[in-house]
Image 1 (tube, rainbow, N blue to C red):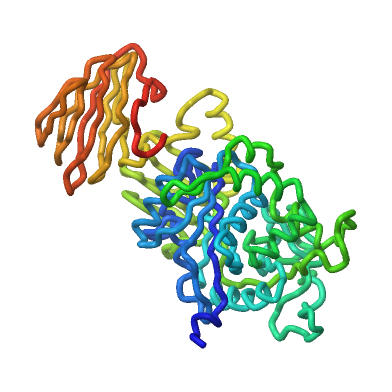
Image 2: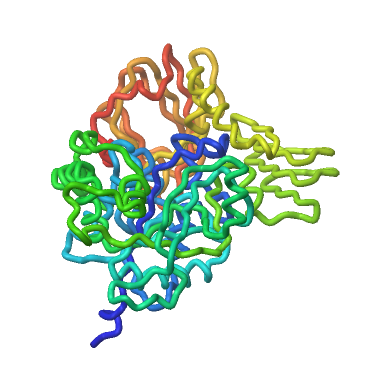
Length: 499
């Protein structure tokens, strides 16, 4: 028999639904932290996909990402750049992690397979890759045997920002043989504690931080959902059955999925198994065992700026810098610049983050409160709370470099082969100047090619389209003028990206 047929098949499932508002102003609702290169050259999502490479004794399926439709093109591009094309399952609306995992399981079994799902949030950091892969290999054996496995982080401090898992007795496989590894039956899940309780957990030694990492067979998860939350399973199944595929994107039915209740993996299944809740339709043995493996791999959920500071390399004074930053007599300071020079003198325990349209200054002890700033921005209707000045689109990106009364200036970059929609504006005219590359411009009934230093004018109400027919990026300056310049003043007639 071929060795490949004897290896367990692991389906990496990356859940990419969070907005990461505590990492504002880098992370924003329309471009959240998992899409950012906060640790090295890879984005957090790319790092999540990459860390499963090289797990001994297993076969890896191409990655599957479950995400909001808003992020689909950026995620597809990031996977393409890695050479890791996979399946991208689109949620029409957020319904928490239990429905997201249920959609992934339905996708995984669609061709008769029953892989072990390795479920990973897209925005976490793992420092010790080998330790992570060794623990995953151990979890694979347990998951193949029918268990739902979660990974608990051995705590090194009385952390009040995490939920906890209390581990119980050593896990025995169904045959009764005690497993030789470190797996424990889950005794209970605990919500985020106060400081005194967290200190007691640390002294007790049986409590682990809840990492949000899971492993189980696809069929085991679906069977557990049938017992614990059949309403969620049936809603997901209906949305899946009415869905469709669009290239690498899998779309579920919007109206059917909107009826799905919202719940987390922990609440929907794990806590019910741990507590052995009596369910009317649960026959003896209907629920799989829930076990926890301790994970000591330098894990962080990078939930706030102080957490990012902790995992990044520091200088002798405990400082972390990225970008154009100068420090003088500073200690334990995180200073990041996306463009302008940031200079800090004589400060300690600060976070300073510069972006094109916002600057954050916060004390390390208050970084959890950054979310309150985002809430204020949203209440005031300010764009800085949800979107960057630089906005990514499936065809490339644009940067609003200047704006005022009745005008706006954008820098536009269209990737090779990129095509904007055939569109029209009711309230603005546009002047396009080609900086580099070649532009194919549709304007009314005519089509023209423009090269460097050439320009064209798009009158208000004129159908138009911009394309890059070349092999290098097309860079342009667009000057808009008119009574209203909002992005919602677009009437699309044709769009290759299905928007």
